[in-house]
Length: 464
Ligand code: FCB
Image (cartoon, rainbow, N blue to C red; front, side, top):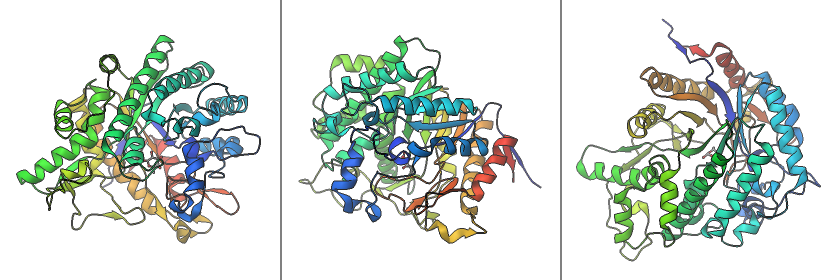
């Protein structure tokens, strides 16, 4: 017997991408350099096959055809981001007229095709001119970001349905200042904590400016959540899970959604002398007063942890991982291309947790998807037969549906991503899109999953 999974009327069905990962450059576009343009050239060996941000998937050039492709598969909503360095090449000051035209055209085109426009202001892409001054470590960047946000609200406010201040605000701090993955490749907890705090304040400043405009569209933020699972119910494993959750989830969720950093986190950071040095009373009051309208949740994988096997080097670098070890669970289902676990129930656990911990805030799945290496191996009759992607999305949607039946306030589902795009570090190694990008010819062709998703949208659900 087949079971029907129906979603509510007006559910957002869409895809997400970002400026750096999709736009690329054309000559005369007057875009300023951001940290990805810089690091993918200067630290080229850190990027898979040395592919830089120059070309990516050509959205700057092809946006009209691309948006037609989005509408061909019946998407009703579409997220991308504005590149700060494209709009304001030096991060502050002069605005690039080419960028105004481009973004106006993109948003207008989306609306004309009947797609709601979801726009994120910051997707890991600090303008290089500001990074040279310390990026988000420098308090002046908060002001610069606020002005950039205000410029966007003024220029594009009539064309955008939902604004987001940041995508995954933890990542620039964690990947850029703690785990040596993103430029500026710093390893220093205290500096990472300062970056995170300044990002939080920037978010609040943007929301404050937005509220002053009294627009009737909405504003929110997009967070990545890795639900935490302990190896066992042994108290030591449970404690490890609690710490992982405190450092990586509650640290940000509570400050954004409840207006305060967790007291316990502050106590630990005080004990280890890791508190960010520059936090003012005014900033904390602003954080407390800031409320968002819509929360986006990116979900890719769970975080399994266990109690530490070894004592921590007392002279080592302070890390959240000093309090837990990752747990490699025997028999876990893997996406071997990315080396991450596939765990569809995670989306259900996140949904239930949001309701339990953060009230009935409206939210949506802002990213979920699967990146696969060597996808050309699955091409038959000219189409990528990505049944694994259909299976992945179906299972996640089934769990989401179950949570919604239990009353969670989820408004939609966006898949990462629309056309195969460039990834941070991995460039084009793993493919995520509903459309395949042929890197040699630039051709974009629909995959089997795209045909499937179109049907899901048209039926507002599916049967399995
Ligand atoms: C997320 C990022 C997004 C994309 C996917 C695969 O963490 O938000 O830009 O790279 O991962």
